[in-house]
Length: 455
Ligand SMILES: [Cu+2]
Image 1: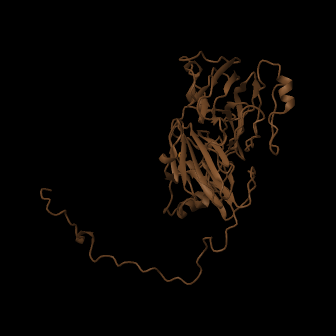
Image 2: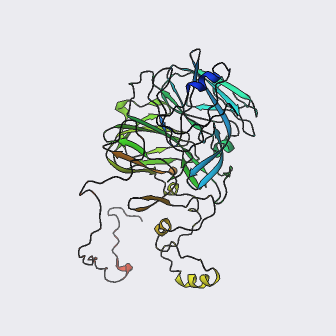
Image 3: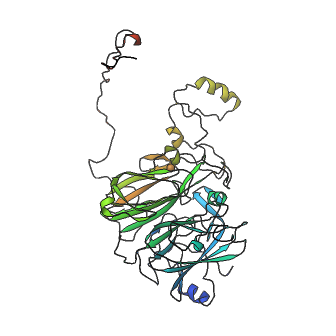
């Protein structure tokens, strides 16, 4: 195990320690760095090679490399991992280098990269570099462009990065199973000129989804649509870190989708512009303002905005995707008066609770008994009480006093006086309602379109 190291968050992080480099410097394979923490690891400035502005991978990390004869060398290890989806729930997934998703690969336009992939899964795999321009033989499609990477074997991919952009990597072998188990990662190609496409904060994450039965820990891999855990980088709210920025900063968020359905990503607060797709950067004249951008399966979208102070929700706008497990089999009880039934059931089951007859917000407030290793369906607490959200939800937290390079959660927003919604407590008359029309519905006048006979 001497070549496996676990890295923890340290201020600024010494990911690629000098000792690590010298110890393996003479070896033919670069050291495989392993990292299992599920909190956002702020990447350090690149220690060598072309300079770039590092990406902040939400609840993730970037893979260190070594330079060898001018080639940037990375080492990915495909292996089973344990991922905390949110505090209180861990999943048995497959990933790379200790985590799912795997670490972000960051390199620069013009770099020659050599990526070693070691297979420690129980079956064959391969890696496809999704969206990256490369020779066909490096594309990683099992059977088509290469034989599978057998269990215990290592493959080598090598290519020159031709164009800056936002990309992903994932297996192209037993894809349905391996992606349902969490095998994926971001692949960022930074521009050769670090001033080009420059932003103050650059975040990235992958949309993924799991079907993990409440009380269990391993995803069902044959599920096509009915997933119960909708995640960003294999984390569900309240396990997803906030996007922290300083007022006025230019912020970019890059999103990739490797689920089985599209996700309209909606951000409250400032309008944003979609500035990048899998195919590269959108010319300024072709960008349009948005508050929601749909990310289809297999797509990448990058969008940018000027940060405005506040706590701004950011979430998938499919409301079932802001729910955790347990939310999907609950019957609709709104308007049902089941007090009589409840009284009878209580004689048989003393702990029976009446729930959902006035909507489901009470479920967000109540500590319902749930199986071990299961997330409540709606959860998370804000300064004003339960948020009632799970899954694909987080908060863009913008403050006037955040320091450059500081990504720590600044706590709840202090709203300036006169800018906060509040209860109206003065006297309130009954609202006047329009009188119902005389007679019954049959007396309603239905006017047919004129000058249009023949019906
Ligand atoms: Cu969604």
